[in-house]
Image 1 (cartoon, one colour):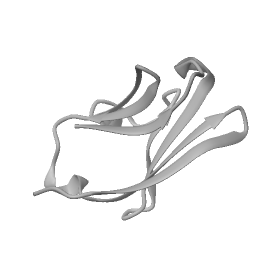
Image 2 (spheres, one colour):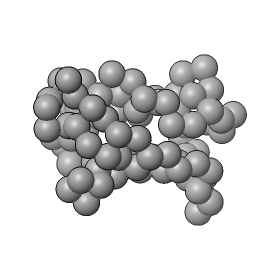
Image 3 (tube, helix red, strand yellow):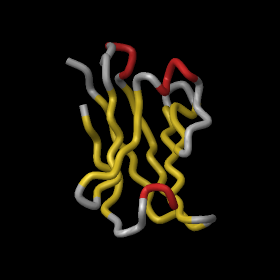
Image 4 (cartoon, helix red, strand yellow):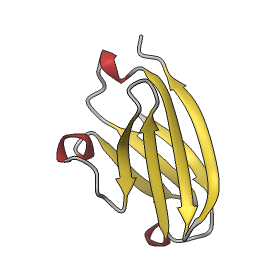
Length: 88
């Protein structure tokens, strides 16, 4: 599953991406990677055709809930998106 967070011309290496799971009030992913190894294996960040995209593999029922994705360039927040992931 892929979720687009931002369209930008900035190189991915110059950005910081933070994914926060609001249901459990915890950070799921930080790029560059400082996230727990177990989450890093399931969530990843890539840039494809100008889109900063979050990828989730091995989807579980417990992944459902409200998430915040924030993309920063230096200290400035370029974009903040909230999405609800429904697992059916």
